[in-house]
Amino acid sequence: MTARFARTALNATIGLAAAALATTSLSALAAQTVTVGHTTSDNSHYSVGVDAFKKTLEELSGGEFVVEEHPSGALGGERAMIEGLQIGTIDTVITSTGPLGNFVPETYVLDLPFLFANYDQARCVLDGPIGQDLLDKIGQNNLVGLAWTENGFRHLTNSLRDVKTPEDAAGLKIRTMENKMHMAAFEEMDVHPTPMAFPELFTALQQGTVDGQENPISVILTSNLWEVQDHLSLTGHVYSPAVMLASPVLWDGLSEEEKGWFKQAAKAGAEATRAEVSRLETEGVKALKEKGMTVVENIDKSQFQEAVEPSYSVYTDQYGSEMLDRVRNSECLASS
Image 1 (cartoon, rainbow, N blue to C red):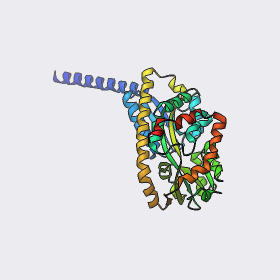
Image 2: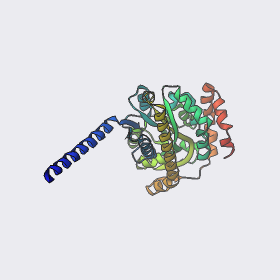
Image 3: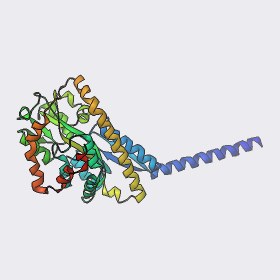
Image 4: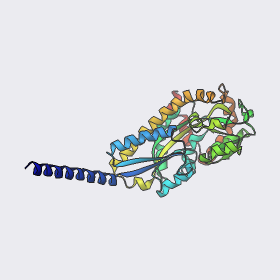
């Protein structure tokens, strides 16, 4: 009796284990992998945001969705990834607004120089009706805008000299994003803008193809640009938002509840990214000094603002001034 009972118990245990394994296997098979592409490193502010997005989405969905990060341009440059979203080869992307204007021209307004004076103003605008209207515009262009996130205020670096005034920058060959607003602003300072995809930047700086570049502190630090750039000028010439986009191919296959999960997870990712940008903005300059960069901190930004003001016509001549006026007249700018 004892042996028979033991065999029965053992068979029952094996049966339960097999059932559990089968359930786990079915669950694993049912889980849908969601790719997230971006061009910055896996220790960047974007990656911090992906971690928060992943944690939130996987928890909300009970493991129904599993997030897979592809950093450092593994899926291509930003423009190429946006195109991948449109045809459904990539699920989600975190991108700067640099190339986004090529797909959604209304977003060009965010790339105008010296539009925002500080982070509070920029975040207030993007989190309010204007930001939502722009996300809706994105949704009309075979893309899905999930949430506004952040790069930060862009600063100028180069390998040749300190830049304290617009005149100091004249003649430099500077890598910019593929964005006509940025390029027009630099041309007004007699800088030679050279658009190229971010994954190509480090090598271009290393080889002297370009003299410098412009990016937020978070990108300069985590992308190790200090290894190939000696001079940093805290110009803060453009606030650089970022946006998390989804493929309409993915989106159209989701239920309303699942869409809510994605939006909530994207918001959590944006909040984590902004917190990391704020941290690096204060701690990053010190770190870059320690790594050997010469930092010009006390810059008369009014000189730069005056120099690039004519570039605004590149936007207003083509798209009018309605969206620009909305931003300038926003309570967000009046109250800061």
